Image (cartoon, rainbow, N blue to C red; front, side, top):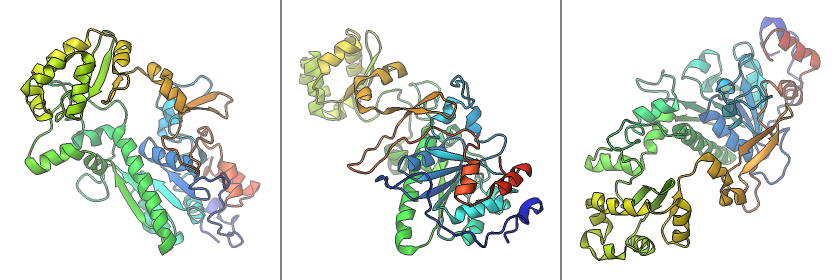
Length: 426
């Protein structure tokens, strides 16, 4: 008999429960790359849920474990809210393709153990040591489920002076240098408009999990993956980090300009901004030709990128003056078929009305359990035959508690009612 809390432990005998690890209940074999994979999702807020959303799009069954009574904190991160839906649009943006079960982790530890035995992946984003105190750390869970890929997502990792700190995107972006280099010239540091450090950490984690699942096919063993926001931010500094490490060059804020390429910025136009980048001398010549400024190509200080960077202010003053002569639409006509990349700075209204965005059908509509329609942005990746898609609307808190306990763990109605009475599940 599994030792659960005294109020209900005598009711539950597990000797007759088969450990069917791949008994996925939500995804049929529809060419989804992760069909048959089950993920036990103990994450909240952004980075973790973003990671599990990607895995769910790829066909994994995502069991979202939430705290009874409150659930994922992002459910309340509003306004805005959709009328008739209690959850914030913030939560709705990254929690599709999931099933929600509410479990008190302290009292329901053994339920997590049971689910871990029948899952392939466990993902959590608690402060280091929090789950270990509850008996749900990697060492504890791996003893009952050695096959499990256990992924921990933290702010700063499990070692070092910051390891016990809670981690948020904007703090990691601050400590990791991103905010120092983001913002207008001679202006204050700015955070990026979207939580990119969280999103990137989720992407790193999803790739690491897939690699560990692949390795398990030969080792038959799970392992512990550790991802953290600060390490992700440092790894994402790319050339700016390399500039400092190799030649001691400190990062500075450039607004929309590029430190190493000229022209490469958002130019003010008659009715907005047009972003243009010329990564080669040939592209620069094409730009001058289309803007009817070919005389600039004869001036030595503009003939190659190194010279243009050295004389950026003089050149950009000429180009900025010219860009203000036309609207974005007029410039798009002028630049049609150009060898260099260009595009207007769009509002979100313009983004979702853009003809190319509409053509790619990235926006998907889902029917929420409330009966309302929820719109989400679908997966960014397509496959030649594999399925990567939006399958179901974000769940309400505890929406699938009964279903998961019945279908995966074979609990009876009486056992489930006892768990609810004891406030172990909701």
